[in-house]
Length: 139
Image (cartoon, rainbow, N blue to C red; front, top):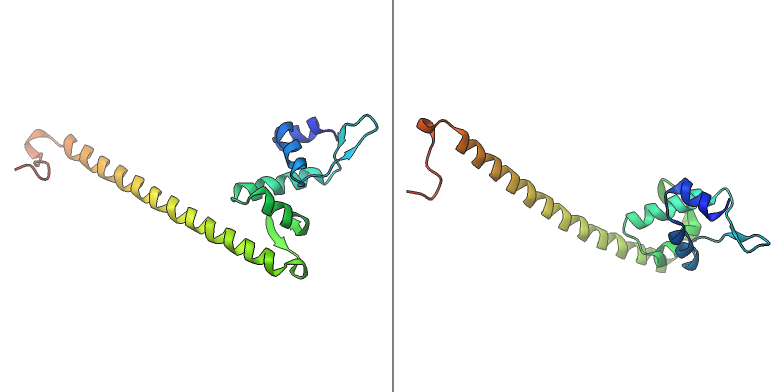
């Protein structure tokens, strides 16, 4: 299939597919006219790349682990291919991702606490006039 068809099937713009090729993530064949020709596995590979990018991995790291992936829905490397250097690199990425998760969780908790406080205040303000208690701190 040509680049336009791969783009349509995966939802990834052709420009991004060319970038993946520049980064060594995709290796299309070339037709006699110079057009890129992607095999049936390319769609699967693009979905793997997108999943890995979405999880926060860089294209450099993806280029190192992509050849060892077993399936698109998991990051499963063949155990005999995992070098110490790659394992250390992946551990570092996992730590970095955990830091991002912790930060995002803290932000989520702060937003939810704010929404809870706003809702509580709105509920107090909706009470009938005779039952309204003074706002905290006013006195």
